[in-house]
Image (cartoon, rainbow, N blue to C red):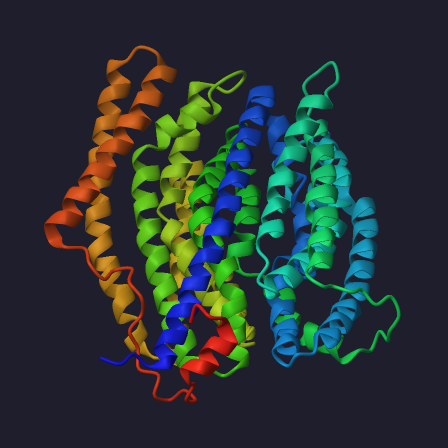
Length: 544
């Protein structure tokens, strides 16, 4: 049977996304491993106490400034603008747009950082009601060290956006790797007579300068970027950028504020170290999220933007369906593994130095509930990027803002009911509502026929993952109770439990025939403009 050129084109896009995701995923895996090493060093040096809570709180104001200028969305906002210029063979126009956007954003962040330096203490005193005056002073001191890093994050993100739009993914993956190396080096090399988080804070600044700014400037320059120092501050590209970014600046999504909500509500918990338990559990969960979900989202977005710019709505919808299906299936497996092995994993990673068995148990409790949200993180990242690629910024922002407001009583109620672990459960419950609403809005606008393969994949993957997870958990529990050494028992529990999980998955897949769950999309592209095979090859290269 003859395969249409449009179907060939869609599969080529999916294939290119897959290759890009492997590059991004490899970099994210390394950065997450280094992130765990960073946390292991931090936990060993400082444990989980008021000092570590102060360090976590020191990021609230810097992160808020980043969110205020839509720093987390800069690449998402700029890539469609640059993609339009590149599609029209207007590279110089793209560099002019970049320069017009760079100037005010840099100036704005410099002003915000200067103001935040002055206001750090009163703001922390306001948002952390559980802190003593001494804790507020120390958190403000750390905040002032970390704040300047935001300038380098903002500029570096624009440099990375240039590389993504040009389908260059390798150098951007170095940013979080070098950032974590900087934090580890700072924490180990800059220490006084008494253990202090100051060295880690200085490492944040150094890592941002090297990994997120200098290296990314080099990568953008290699991709062809030519910064134009002159030009008008009223350039049309600047207006276009802020029109796209304004919804993201005004309506901070639950996804971005989830960590801040955990910190704020965590400070109200009775136990010292509660914020740290949440942070370590969340960061451990974010390892598979980064490797699977974030890699797919980052890799897919330039292609989503290009398909949207060229009006290929059905190709975009089919590509989205394939991407969500694959991410969800892999994420469900990661959920089963991390939930089943949460205690031995946390014990191996952190239980040394001042970190106690009680800290491990409390953190494992948060990880258990956080891990249930891994598939949700993957799906929402892709759906949101689909809307952003079409310049429908308000849809995910409105949904996310409503979800955040609804989440507030959920966080409070589950904290009261279950303590610190309840906050992790609240994160997953709130994220489930946000993802469901976002997916509903996407498929309602693009066609419910593209949701069918996703639903069938979930229906097949969840029972297998649940069975494998319970098998791995039972095995791990038996081993940890049988081995006297907690460290040795935890290592064997993870190794053998993982082997049991994989064996059950393989056996189940072989028994029921798990074919077609993550295969290439099948779709009718009759409503798309006719594209010959020659044109497809011209657009996406010979491999089409």
